[in-house]
Image (cartoon, rainbow, N blue to C red; front, top):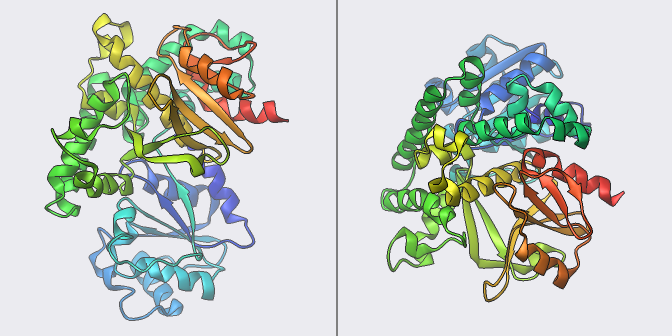
Length: 438
């Protein structure tokens, strides 16, 4: 398995002003594997501590933040003597040890020569529970499920990835059928690392669904274990409503679909909890497609997606034959799955800010608006080769963007007023936009 974030970790290692690094991400997106793989490939030694499983070390930081005492304790616990430069110190599930997060400040100020990477699945929750956080003393990286590019690499399809990255559009079109076949597999399998690894090994889609269900069950257990008891039912209601929210033609989140007569204030805490866990992505509407998009954010209107397309398919118990072979009863939800997929690829690219736009009277809607440098780019998503783009045409005529994207199963082509970008090439969309700006 290869993860793009490994390259960013290598850049962090050689930085002159390196600070302790915190990797954020939902449970089971591969944070532990990523840290250990980084240690294996880039360091002579690794001192790994998991504060969830190592009960003795949970009290390591209660006495004080004396770096020499902490380093000696790490050596005793792991059998590895930390040395500057050639040892990676890993604090896994850091939120489970009281004051461990605060200790990163003292490593930054008093021992910056030591390389420290930390992670925690419920870190966002911990930070909202009166945990002192070392503002300005740490760096962050966000890890998400595997993108479609990483999925192709895991499946041994490096040549297909090379074609995408080289923008060999004629050859990509030649192998279009293969790309679409693999994309539909990705819709079902998704990007959760354990699922992808097992599928790459045995191609068993029944096992895929079993593992996905286990992951979903573990999330449900997290709700009960870590959330305030009075909020747990509302968390479940919001979480379980997401597929029906996305199945609607207008995918704006409606509290009334969660519970009849519900209002925003009834579910604000539940929504915040899911976001802090990294389980959902909240994409806000903007009232005007102008720079910066953040200034025109409509906080009362948003779309809610989950972290992984495969998990979404599992939540609705989508049959593999329906997805891979097609079924007229599936046509409507196919759009939801396609939007979830595009969202998942764009979220993983930290170079863009992501929103959506709709007209005041909902007469037109653009699935996604991204801000890249000094441009606002509209993106309309089509599940198949349906090339109608009424909302996009209306948007282009009114706001005159320099680049407009329609993403569908149709081939790549640049037209007078839009670019059709294949769904299976969306991972390369930001690079395409960057090249157009040169």
